[in-house]
Length: 137
Picture (tube, rainbow, N blue to C red):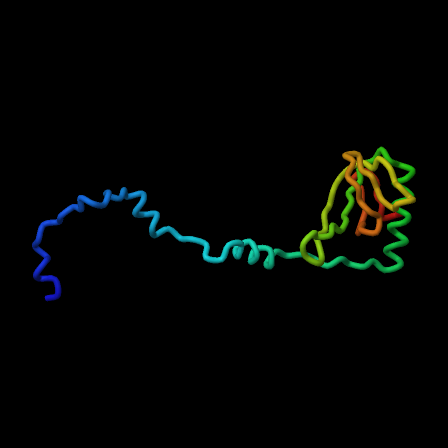
């Protein structure tokens, strides 16, 4: 056989080299990232973003009437669905918030919610309310 000449010899511990602990030995075989940042890039590339839906004229008219109603009735909570642009990729995601409207800024064309969150009117997809039926407006 191949190791017949040394198989029965006793093990001689080195006097020159320090004995390596089990923890340090295991560290030699731990995985490493050969390409730093690669996993993050793959996750970012596979992250889903939606494209913004452009409303037609009829939907804009309905949204405009709802905004006029909100301007007169700011004490009611509204459910607002709007498009938020992604900072990295083209596209974004639709977000739905429920809040009272503090102010409608006609000059800059934005809504300021009770928690000071700002939503631009051009990004609003739909407005609804649990308290009032806005479908008849």
